[in-house]
Image 1 (spheres, rainbow, N blue to C red):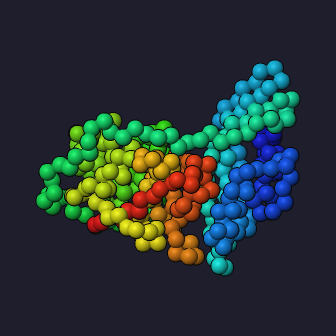
Image 2: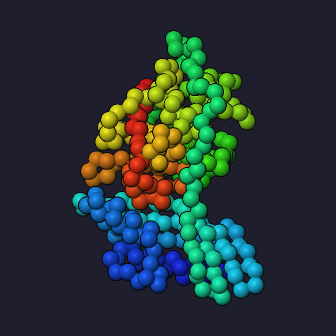
Image 3: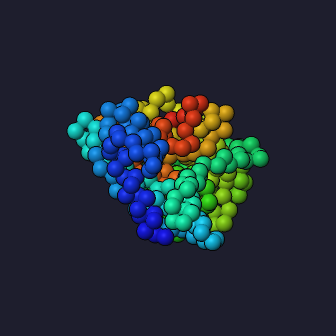
Length: 290
């Protein structure tokens, strides 16, 4: 079965760097990526793709395969080269070894925010909560763990905000609010605040925190620094689904980001090439204070 997946990749890779469509193997993702890069005067020079089978079932002449695809894109923009990477889980179905269906398993499920209001603890004058945010350490951590799990931290199925919280913590951000789940930002043993793991709750925390880990909203992504955070509301309905950390800048000075859940690194901040993108998508840009 692995050879069928490998053959699928071989047919797709060239579509990322070519404008020719072969409708028998046409891959919409490739067109979406090309379109997104074109808007930035950038192009995909080369692509590598590899697959790993996660689960496989066979029933008579039908085969169903859940697999993971790892894409590496060599990007050229204004004579600058960099590598973007992303991982996606996909589900493929074959009949008599002929592909009949192949689609992404969409990872961005909305997490319900805390049933309790996010409150601020009475620690605003506590000098222990002052800190100097080490942006380099936060970015180094995001690069080290973008596609794997640090066993020192608890892992969540929807892991995007947990990953961002880890990056901020490694950057020196102090926890506060334990043991009240609706207060502050913290992780202790097998317990955690909503803001540590829920995308919308972290956005609320950034908007309200007056001590410890604090952030200031800025108007545009080009104002962000390495180690800053972008929050995403894919449907534009006021409920934020996803968070990323800025780990680089492109040739135009715009953020490139790392993230979990749909594991990716050095991805353009706007996520217009994501299957979760909608024209109603809204963003919040937060620069970390400290």
